[in-house]
Length: 180
Image 1 (cartoon, rainbow, N blue to C red):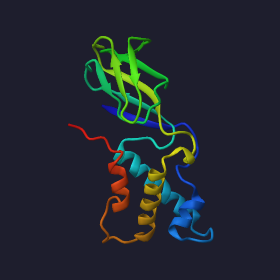
Image 2 (tube, helix red, strand yellow):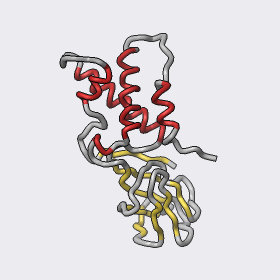
Image 3 (cartoon, rainbow, N blue to C red):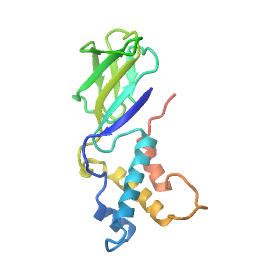
Image 4 (cartoon, helix red, strand yellow):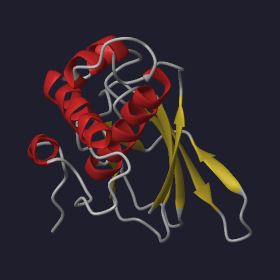
């Protein structure tokens, strides 16, 4: 399954003042760089955990004919979220499927079909904890801060180990989907 993310707002998934306090940075000389580090940290966490921190429109396309259930690639999704499903015809056109399915929302959302769709699908839905950084769970907010701090402390260091900070990885492990 392939998918794209489209932000639905302009908010950042962190509070710059809180992020700077976590880094023990005073003043505003480095605000642009610190903001970029926070954005990069959030994006890395989203990709690693396959989740949306802030509200995003997810457009997923199945590569094959799915069965009666399709595990959606990014969560969390509200149980009452609006979802649109299009059947992708052999000629590439898309036909709206108005009903015949239901959404099991949550951190690991699943789309259930009454029958088998019979062709690849394009599924569009909204995922995320909300429109503002305050909606993000506190432990994920801490993970963003810890990862941004790692970027800040190791800026310009080519020999430093790459990847998530240990504290960030431990938090992300609680959110990451384990596949069989």
